[in-house]
Image (cartoon, rainbow, N blue to C red; front, top):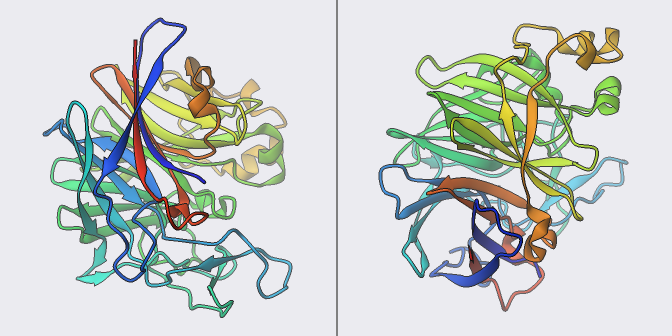
Length: 371
């Protein structure tokens, strides 16, 4: 069974750290379902105005694994709860306990947002648990990261991939999507067009704030031929004041890395978690100082004409910060999808996929690493 963990460990020079385990108390069940608890937590942010409060978010809801339901050779997705409404989750942190405090429903003009895919040809085809095809929803979202900036939550999601500006009551004020003419997704087209071609179900996976700019990261390389060979990743810079994209930076994935799990900020640097499903879980510190800003470039053509992009342009410099596989409890986790820093401690949260494999035990847990 996959379990939803919140993990704290210290940035210290020590070869051994023990993890203390705490259950996250009071996680409620989904109202429309008799046994499924709120889960699928993706993203983590310490409330800077109230350090006892941790902010997380659920993803699109309880799903089946990818499957070709209609036998057309393209993978589809089963939605166990098609009307599920993605939620902002507020946790209360004390010295020895983490408690579920409340959830905030994401809404468009007082109508609850769905977690359903937006558009045929760009997203998985949705089906219900009885294998009946569902309608696409141009406004549907699959949240994966969250950060609070003053009086707004900023949320990244996978379908567009898109960036959401959300007020404190959960109302979606704006949605920003890639500037692609044939896209029918709901939103303002203010993100680079090339992002629309992200790998299926591998859109934005992390968000953080640094020097008054938001940074958003794609989970995987975009699957153009040359991109796949060079394993190029994307980091987008967005100004929350002007609500405009101001940067597009590229980085190389580690040879063992398969996808990005989360972003955070520490000592004026962006932290990025890179992982695979096995024994690679590594946090890198990113240095953008000399990195080329590719905003406005035709990146697809650039890669077609440059066999080695790194030889002519500056990609983001990555420095190893910490190898999480030093801790056996983390090595076993497939989906670390939230990260933040508080008092020189790294906090990590793991997406438990709503614990659908076990109806009897859907508890969430906290791990704290101490000397």
